[in-house]
Length: 246
Image (cartoon, rainbow, N blue to C red; front, side):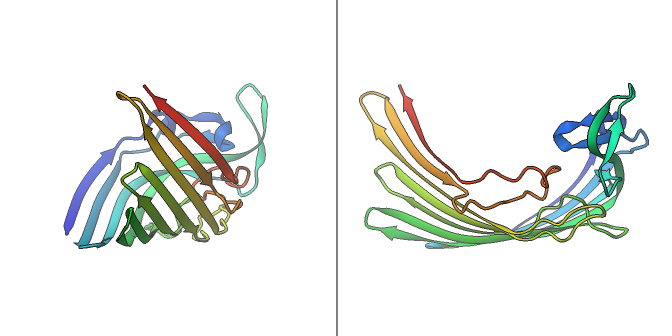
């Protein structure tokens, strides 16, 4: 068992203070706030780990209190045509202002697993889940908060330098949303990877890796992204990687 306490102060950045223009990567017209003060974070975390023979488990709990938390607040529910100081239009952008207010983050991470000794290697299985609740002290949710997730992972490794892994992640719907924010639907993410190392004379070696990402070809949107409505995560991706070291 372990526990940690910390208190950290952060000054606002130059962007947070003085931004005044278009940020196309975020599809926003951002406005800084010269009245921002330093942000203070007081943090408590507790971790419990249990290992016995082939079983392992971890549980982590945390609570973070941020006084004068700095964040980017969307001012407009609908996009609008915005112009810079020279009168040039930049299409439909959301007007966003750097703001601050007291906030709290409370969450947990848990993982349970077991390993199996096979004839020619070891198989490890684990299942986990994490969730965080992000709220302003005065009421309301913090924008772009991470949704709850569950993860199942299988890993196999033997003495012949062969390794394979499979991971399945379920990201749940995020409906704890801020004002002017859109909820994000749940999705499943299935990834695999296998690699083999071939050793030659001296220090030369060849590594061949096969990978597959988002094998279910899900339309997945990252809720923490500023442009999740326009840019989903990559679809199905299968590839082969060869690395020769000499």
